Image (cartoon, rainbow, N blue to C red; front, side):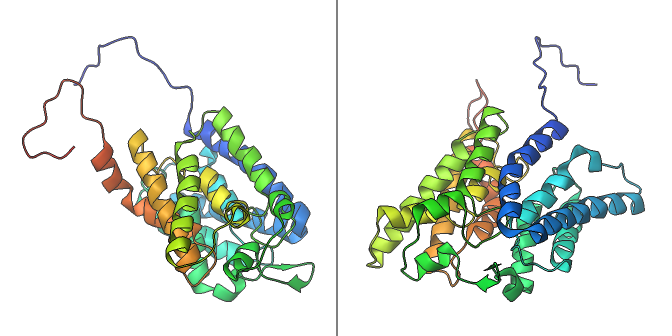
Length: 313
């Protein structure tokens, strides 16, 4: 028996349930705006995503005779995050496939919450993008199909700052309104669910690397161009709601900064040199895979412990 006798002990009041509840509250403004902007079909997709994720987890646990965990809200949050990343024109079976893949293939088969090696919702989005590319890139608004702001930026065209900030343009359900995303992100910071390290490092790194790549390739870099990259696409949503996932992001302070720089570089690379305008989902997924290495490198040395010769930091 190992007896812990050193005191006093500080008990953390946060639980998985309270953290997931806060994340759910934080994403409500941007999802609510998505429903307002795109109509009832967006709401339909959100409800299907949540139902598919919750039911997938429940059925898996019933069949495998494991404890029921759907009441910790983690499956619900996965559904909400997945819905944020889907186009408002998606047919009903797209969120069903995405929800089942996120929960079964990425989460439960690896041991459930805390054991998944990448963000389930983003993994599902990448799976859907690869499998159903045309449907996942259909951003028809009011019956009119048009390019997203990121696609316009990639083509060298200008975008309206206020439109991007408020969200009156085409895009995924939960990624169009920068204002709504910032409200949710601020809520998470105030509630101390997340720190500013990952979001701030990620956003700044993306801007720096986009600037560097454009200068190297001989393209002009302007303030409006960089503002367009911040306010459009999934950068803000990814920074506050996805890159900060407890399970798939580093726990060390230095590791979080390194992680933010890595996914910022990958996002800039995908957006400027890739074949598609977006790159947040792929960048964060790659960052998730590197987290074990990042933590191994950045883990602090125990106080009073001498490092053996040849050991790494």
